[in-house]
Image (cartoon, rainbow, N blue to C red; front, top):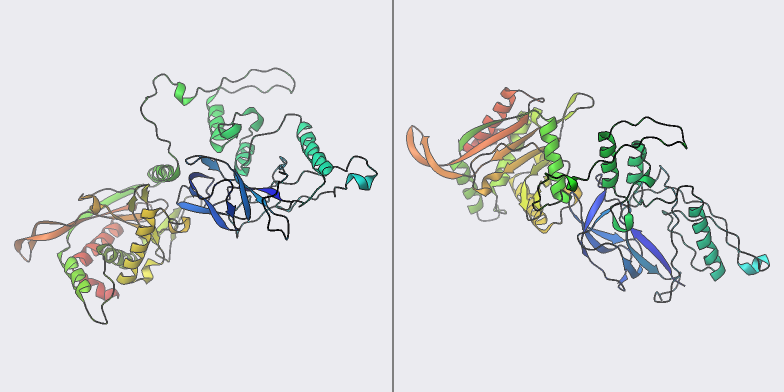
Length: 484
């Protein structure tokens, strides 16, 4: 006897509540092993392959490629063989999960290997009809959605009784079941005092999504106040707010949903502009000697020769040296406690443009790395960014960002700070320009450096000192020897 188990979209960490299906890695009828990746999804931070915690035959998939699912939504079902049996092709009796209410101490579905769940609900044993003198089998309580233990074999009468019990439990509810899977949606509704039974879900089969709850909250806040009346009496009803598409003057051009990485970028940049009082200063620097130093490093031969050094790695090494002198810029602001938090480690983010949008991979403990180590780590993270395989951990936790927009052929920019960091160094293109060198006009390799900083963490003197030190190291790389 086999059983059918449902695998739901797990909690992917980092506060993510939804994901978009990019591609299915298995088809209906395929045999999967425990922890085998079955679907590739795109979250707001990265592409993730989701492993299945069950081994067996895939009996159904839920969601087409491109569909957006909330955490907790069904991904697929797997027919799992009985204990000690390798035959998973026998007919199975699907066991439908009851719509039990979630416990607040459960963290929900998570990826294999971490996370918690609520204690399983206690059940009464199901006795076969023969054991009760041919009478109706004793009803058992519907199992919780989080429970993974399902009896491997039950009599036909017991299965029918269980199904009827579940149906009766739902039918006994005075107001009917709610088409909600995600615990986050339920909690959001509770916090705003919304009755989910009054909402119409926009998800598949009427599933209520987080966006449905947020829209209802917005509509209610925009609607006129309604005087409460005793239960059972008719009262005035606030008119529903019109749908955005119903606005007569709304533009009718092509619309692209702000979700996934694009949505995360929009939210983060908006928050940065809203919360951070930023300012920008810039300076032109002669990078000729820096390029000569890099060429000498890469031309070295023999046992001392190492991997090639990139310009970005040299600029990163200069950044970490400058942050050691001006640690005020390696900080964040705790707005709730009105405190500036100066950070000890430098986790250096760098902007990388990919086909999926702008991402900022993070080099951990950049202050402990030399030019060779930085070059290798930049290369590794850039390759993962281009293939869309960066993990959420490699995209979060930065304390300072280096933005090389010179690769786009532009000289300068006023970048937006990567919230919640306090500063970002921008680097323009290195181009041949006329420059006064040693009292004479010459053609030199010139770069424009810009620093955008949070004016709450420091004043212009600190920001100017940081930028001037960076420019001095670019013009005379030997200045770095003082700090090595």
